[in-house]
Image (cartoon, rainbow, N blue to C red):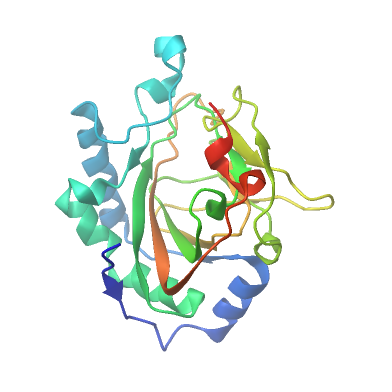
Length: 250
């Protein structure tokens, strides 16, 4: 892999943020991006979606046609490979420095994603990113482009799940999840919803259980721009079909 390393840890970041991240597996940086910046990113990808199919589109149930909103608004992935603005945004010093500080290492790009989550669309089964990506540590930066709350399918986090390692997977309920797999949630684990405003960024680690439920609104998107970063010093997790989403069929 040809890595492009970012060395930009923030000496001014509150040490309590790193402690919170280590304890809970996530951290929210409020108002990291301005409303004008959010509008630019959101509008850019909405226009791009109108252009038609892009590499890696994923999300809708083709059998349902217009009955599945994700057929019109499938997820983007790795946009930096064909969109120069994405490459600028994924390397933004605010994202890079926060991610680097929280993970405790320099970071480099793993992938980018854009979720539209239009009104009426399904969520995503609770999962760990390291059930998909077998390198560790990784950290995600999840930039809210819309207000996120329970009604439109906010992010769900299981605090402290970052300490559990990679957990077993099972088939998800495809009536509620657009992806086929989900984590088998340990007994006693508590879910919390993360309310966010446009411009807030949620950072979380590869072992942190997260996902979302359906967008129950009639007129509100829940768009997010996501960057996953590798830490500079990586381990490859052991191959184990019981903890990998690769074997869960759609």
